[in-house]
Amino acid sequence: MALNVTDANFAQEVLGSDKPVLVDFWAEWCPPCKAMEPTIEALSEELAASVKIVKLDVDSNPGITVQYNVRSMPTLIIFKDGQPVDLKVGAGQSRVQLIKWLEQHAA
Image (tube, rainbow, N blue to C red):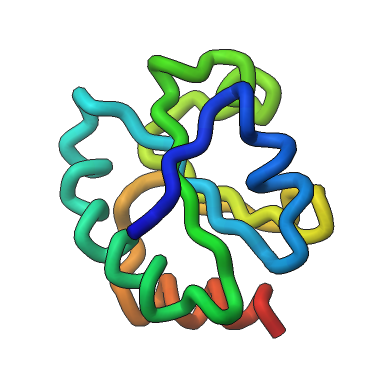
């Protein structure tokens, strides 16, 4: 299951991680976020050895949301060595596309 992160523990869980981290910026009111949720949850278990997957509720955590200029939901940002290295906006990616994208950054 994907870990929920907050403004308070973002630095520790994401920036301080020793492996790449996918942050799913989502909102309760966002239908595309809800549509992607089962895929994100499944991938968090399948790829746990190589990628950490976390979720950040944008409504409850405005600090990090503003810091990374997240304006649309869902936004997926990959962090590596404490830095954002790639992002995707929207729910247009298939499960296979997401796996390929994540594995590219986990290598």
